Length: 333
Image 1 (tube, helix red, strand yellow):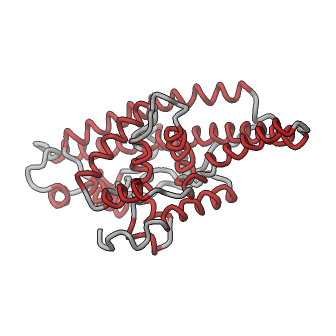
Image 2 (image 1 turned 180 degrees about the vertical axis):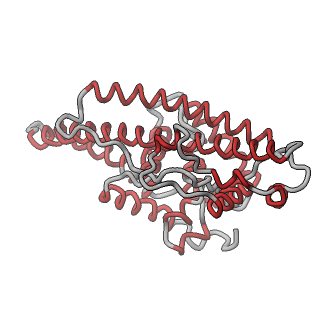
Image 3 (image 1 turned 45 degrees about the horizontal axis):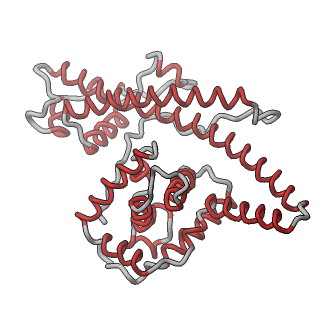
């Protein structure tokens, strides 16, 4: 499967992690309601700024290569921020992190974009204004996305804490239950919870029909494109961002030992196969449940927000799935 890696323009503050919750009372309803509302508001801002960036990108024919070269030039020529510069200083305009582009010469612009490119204006000052504008559009989008992720991480931490508390209470109730039927039912419920949360189903035996379908798709670009389009439709039906497909693409090369690199995107193909055969309008459909569990679990795995012990368990199940395809795929992508 072909690599489809998008490298984001890295001119943004370092990731500071999610906001810290109130240790004395992290489970209060006010905190949850506030975070839910804040997430909604920031998501809307992110969507608006992304649309603005995409519009500028289309209008001026901007590629990832252009952005990398602009970033490189800016880094080499900008006046560094004074000591103590904050995010507020940047947002208020007191410090311009892209000041290196203020003096970019015309020949450098031509070198980056080529003669006759849409970004080149009648005068060089117009060109610089356009260059600065697209870079700032991207920066604003990425900054809002960073903030969204921080708030979302805090929300997920809150949900995780509440969930852990419920499971602890349930475990205590099961341990104390004397009725064998009720006890067995409770234990089965707990097993199913961990089965989904830790992605234990990835270690389940796989029938030859499913494995052969994935193996055949691995080398069939047209089939891959069809699977991607169908998966996007299904994710939309589940109100899940279609960007999750990109989030777990090339998972093997990014997170697994080298012995799995030649079969990169097997995990993604497994997920898409699962999703395509799920009944998304029925939330009790087992394939739908597993697909949603993969979205929730792998999203946190990729962003490294899982507890170490849960991450390790999840990784072991992923490796069990990957091992099923070792030696069964072409070595050249």
